[in-house]
Image 1 (spheres, rainbow, N blue to C red):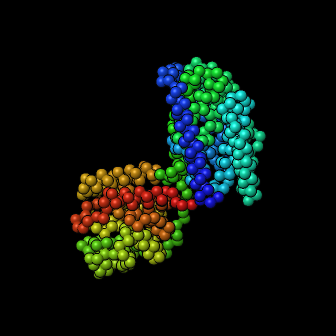
Image 2: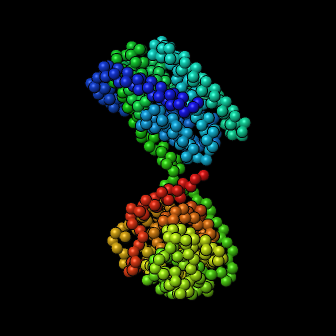
Amino acid sequence: MDRITRRAVRATGLGLGVAATVVAVVYLAGAGSTEDLGDAVRALLADPVGLGLALLAYAAAFGLRTWCWRRVLPALSPGQAWAALHVSLLGNHVLPLRLGEALRVTSVLRRTDLPGAPVLASAVALRTGDLLAVVLMALVAGPTLVLAVGGPWLWPLLGLGAAVLAAAGIALVRQRRRGMDLRLPGPLVALATVAAWTMEAAVVFEVARAAGLQLSVLDAVAVTAVTIAAQAVAVTPGGFGTYEAAAAAAMTAVGADPAQAVAVAFVTHGVKTIYSLMVGVVALGWPAPAYFGRFRLPRDLPSRPADRAVAAAAPVVAIIPVHNEAETIAEVVARLPSEVDGRPVRTLVVDDGSTDGSAAFAASAGARVVAQPSNLGLGAAVRRGLAEASALGPAAVVYLDADLEYDPTELGLLARPVLDGTADYVIGSRFAGDIRAMRLHRRFGNLSLTRWVRWMTRRPDLTDGQSGYRAFSPRAAAEAEIVHDYNYAQVLTLDLLGKGFVYAEVPITYSFRETGTSFVTPGRYLRNVLPAVYRELNPVR
C-alpha cells in the first residue's frame, strides 16, 4: 500500500468517525436530560454494595483477559499482561482514535525482553477475537436489537473480523515454526473471552437496575456487545458520544425510555472511565519496570563481582580531573600522601582543556598528566582517568576534585575499605563528617539531590550523593561506565551499585572553595543529569 493510499484510508476512517460522533452528539442532545442523569448518579451511589460487585466483575473480566493472553503467549508474565491491558484501557479513555490499542503492545515491549512479532501477533489475535465475540454474543442475546442497530454494516464487520483473526492466526503459526513459545487460541480462550464480556455487562446491568431501568441479563449483555462494537469508529477520547449513542439506542430498542437510557449510558461510561483512570495509572507504574521505564534500581541486584588479582607492589592511584585550577592543583598534588598502608600513591591528573597552565603546575608538583583533546566535561575526564588508572594495575583508585574542597591527606580514609576488601565503591561523605563551610543554597541542593539518589538506589545509608571524593576497587574502576560527559555523580553510583559492587561511606572534612568558580549551574545541571540518569536506569537492550 503506497503512501497516498494509506493517507486516503486514514482520511476516510477519520471522516466516518467524525460523522458518527457528530450524529451521536446531536442524538444525545435531543434525547438526554440532566435531571435523569442526576437521578441515575444518586441512585447508583445509594447502592455501594451493588456498585462494588459490578466493579469487581469488571475487574475480574480483565483477570480473564490476562489469563487468555498468557495462554497464547506463556512467556508473558501475569503482572505485565495485566498492566498492558489496563494501560491500553487507560489510553482508550484519554486518547482519541483508539490509540490505546497500540499501548497494549508497546507496554509489553517496553517492559519486557519479549520480541515484537509474537507480542503483536498474540495481541491482534486476541483483540480481534474480542470484537468477534461481542458481535456473536449480541446476535445470540438480542438478534433483533443487533440487526436493528447494526443494519447492513453487520456482515461486512463480521467478515473483516474473521479475515483479521485468520491473518493473526497465520502469524502465530509462523512464529511457532520459528521456535517461539506460542499457542493458538483454543476453545478455553474462546469461553474465557465470552465470560469476560459477560462480566463486563455487570456494570450496565447494575447502573440500569439502580436507576429503575429493568434490563435482563441477556439485555445487558446485548447492550454491552453492541456498544463495544460501535467503538470501532470512535474518534474522541473514550469514544465519548458514540458510546452513549450506541448504548442508549440499544437500550431504547429493548424497550427503555430514551431519556432514561441516555442517563444510564452516561453513568455506565463514567463508571468505566473512573476505573480506567484509577487502575490504568497504577498499571503505568506497576509492576516494575514501569511503562516509562525504571526510575529506581531494582530491588534484586546482581551478586558482588569477584575482584581482580592485585600484585604485591600494586599502587593506589589518585586521579584528579582539572580544568583551569592553576591556583590549587599543585597544592592538591603536593598534599597527597606518598603511600597508603605500605602501597605507593601515584597521581594521575586529567587535564580537561585547561587554558591557564594547570597541566604544567600539576606536572611540576610530581603528577603524571594526560590531556583531553579539548574541554569535554567532568564526566568525560573521570571516564578517562578511570581507564588510565586501570591500566596501571592498581590496588585501589581514588578520585578527588582539584579545588581543595576535599582534603588530599584523607586519601587513605577512602582507600582502606577497598584495600581491606570490605567495599568496592567508597564515597567520602561530607554530611557524615565535618563541613567547615558550605553555602546555604549549595547545602540545600546537595541534600535534595542526595535524597533523590538515596531513593533511586534504595540505600538508606547513602548520605552524600554528590561528593567529589570517591574510591574504587580495581574491577569497579575498570567496569565503571559514565554515560554522559557533563558530570558523573549520580550515574556512576547507579552504574556500580546496579552491577552489584559493594558500597560504603567514610566521613570526611569539607571546605568550600576559596578560588575559581564551579561549572555547575542548576538549570544546566538538571538538563544534562536527568536524561543521563534515565539512560543509566534504562539502557537500550
